Length: 378
Image (cartoon, rainbow, N blue to C red; front, top):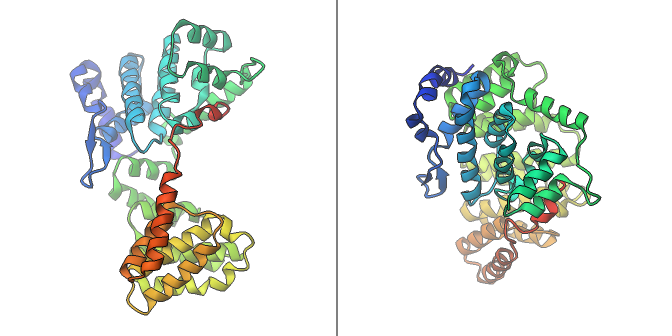
């Protein structure tokens, strides 16, 4: 178990006995050093929820409910939308007390933003069965009441889960949030350490994973290395993955990943050389221009063009312009990178074109909650 979690568990008796301590877990809107939105108490709340995962008692009902309420406030106010394990863990912990009126907390969590509408477990609202859910919805108005009914019942009015499906879902939750620390895998501890910003401990555990695991998940490994800021380690892993690649898709994908890391490390010449090395393979991939792989390559090439010395910069820019013209779909980040490169290279015609494309792309973005009704079956 992580040292920080052990300390939090040791602190639980004091927190239980003094509600004045709970302000440390309250949702509090703030800004990061970069000026971006954040919840100042987000990490503290995640830590105490994790401590409760392993050490909750019957006297923690009010604390758990309070933590879920704070998490819902974050989800409702976060301009980046999203959701994660905190709200699911708090909801799972609250199930212990089987309170009918907690239906409304689960309803608020489900409808907090577009991502929760799509991804938060609808089964939390269903734990007392169809009759209880119908009674709750009839007893109080809710801003998403009709949509919640569609979440719980199909067009024929049939409840979306039977008893065995609900049991399987609860068993899966119990496996995902085990009460016994011994049931947590080394990967689980590494992910928790990162979430709780215990990066030094995460790095030690990751080295253990590399040395002790017979069948390494290289995709997970490289993702984790990047989370920990270990770009040289990620570069080494990507090169191992490229050596093992046996299709053009995988070769181009790993080459792009290598180029992206090299770019982040400041080696733009080698980054550009890596992209050109897979140029011929790209044309052998059916539909490359319709998927994210093509868009990622073009974006990275534009980024290289914006910072590389001549003649590499112009070579990368021309390649990116040509490949961008072949894409079936584009993205805001591609056009932002293209505008930066066109400005740096003093290319007025391309600058006007990409600025217009960027404006059109921004204007086409829909409201994050648009289409909420389509997520009822998620």
